[in-house]
Amino acid sequence: MHIHILGICGTFMGGLAALAREAGHRVTGCDAGVYPPMSDQLRALGIDLIEGFGADQLAIKPDMFVVGNTVSRSRTEAGVAKFPLIEAILDAGAPYTSGPQWLSEHVLQGRHVLAVAGTHGKTTTTAMLTWILECAGLQPGFLVGGVPLNFGVSARLGAPTLPALRGSLPPEGADSPRGGPAGNRTPTLPAVRGSLPPEGADFSWGSPFFVIEADEYDTAFFDKRSKFVHYRPRTAVLNNLEFDHADIFDNLADIERQFHHLVRTVPGSGRIVVNGLEESLARVLHRGCWSTVRSFGSAASDFSALGEPDDFAVLQAGQPVARVQWALGGVHNQLNALAAIAAAEHVGVSPADAALALASFQNVKRRMEMRARIVLNSAPNAAPVTIYDDFAHHPTAIRTTVNGLRRHVGRARILAVFEPRSNTMKLGTMKAQLPWSLEEVDLAFCHGGGLGWDANEALLPMGARAQVAPTIDALAVQVASQVRPGDHILCMSNGGFGGVHDKIATLLRAG
Image: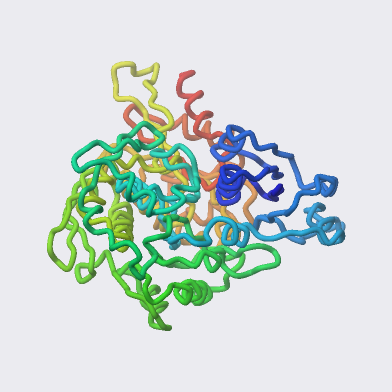
C-alpha cells in the first residue's frame, strides 16, 4: 500500500516509516522543523518528504494517511487551522489511522513483542535488549526512539520466523555469520540453543521477536490512550515511573492508570519485568496483575547488581550468574542493563550470555555522545575540552546523566548546557527541580527563550554557578567565555538545540 505519514520526522513515526518501506510499502510523509538523526535516516531510505501540513497533500491520494501525535485540531488566535491537511482529510472522509494502530495491524501481529516502558531509559534499554537478542542469533525486529549505534538504524523488521532461524544456527563454537550492521561480530551463544523449548511448545516460540520502545504519551488527536496499549506485549518492562507529560496528564496517578492498562494487555504466559525500587510501579501492580513478575534493582529483587556501573556482577535470586563489563557508566545504565537481562531471560537468553552481549553494546546516538574534543589555542599542551550531546530533559534524567559523567571524569569541571524544551518543562511544572538536577555540575547554562516562566528565578538557588541566555547564539558565547582546559561540556535537550554543540566548538577553535 501507499501510506502518507503526518509527522514523519518524529523518532517513532520515522521508525515506522522505515519498517513500512522495508516491508515493501510505498512511503511518503510530511513534517515541519526537520533535524537529524531522523531526517538523515529518512533521506537515506529514499523517502520523499514534504515540508509542512498543507491541505494540497490530499491530492497525493494514498491508501492510508498515518497520523502522528504531533498533529492536532488546534487553531491560531485568528481561527486558522494549524494543520490544514488533517482538516482536509476529515472533510473528504479519506482513510486515516494512528501510527501505533498501523504498526499493530501491519507489523506486530503474530510476533512475540517485548515492550520497554518507563519515564526514563526506554530508548537505551530497548537498544540493549535488541542487541542481546541479536547476539543470541534471534534476529529480532525492533523500533527504537533513537538510533542504536550497533545497528545504525532506528527500526527493522527482523527475521520472519523463529523456526527457520533454528535450523540456520551455526555449529557449536563457530562464529556467527550474522554480524551487527555496524560491523560487530555476533558471538555464538550455545546456552540459548539448549534453552529453546521443543518445537510446537505452548508458548510464542514459533513467533519472531520484535522489541519496541513503549511510550506512555497519547496515540493521536482522536485516540487519547497511551501508545503502548496497542502493542500487546508478551514481555513488558516497566523501567521506572514518575510524573511527566504535564501537557496531557494532571498527576502521577493518571500515568499510573495508563501503565496499568499496559499490564492488563500482557497474557498469563507473559512476563512483566518491574523496577523493584519504584513505589509508583508497586502501586501499578497492586491494581491487579495476571502475568509472571520478575523484579530488578533492589537487593531483594530477582535481579540485582553488585559493583560499579561499568563493571558489576549480576545476581539472580542473590546468586552471581553473570558479570557486565562495558563502556557505559551511571547507575541508571546499570539498572537499564538489569531490566534488559531479565527481559531477555524470558525468551531463553541466559544472564551470562546477555552480559556477554552487553560488553559490545555501543549505546544510542545522543546518549552521552561525544561530539567534539578540542585543544584550546591558548593552552596547546593542556588537556582538551570535550563536548557531549545527550537527550536528557526531565530533571531526573538530567541528574542521572550528570552523575554518570561525574563518575567518569572525577573532579574535572562539568559545564551543563541545557534547554527546557519538552512540553512539560515549557509549562514550568518541574522548574523547581532544576537546581537539584544540576547539583553536581560546576557551571550551568540555560536557554531561557520561549519559556512561560523565568529561568533566572528558577535557578536562583545555584547563585553564580548558573547563567541564562535568551538565544542559542548568546548561550554559546556564554559557555565559550567560561571554558578552561580539561572541561567537559554536557549539552542536553530533546531537540536539535539549534546546533549549539557546533557553535560552542567553533568559538573554542577560533580562540
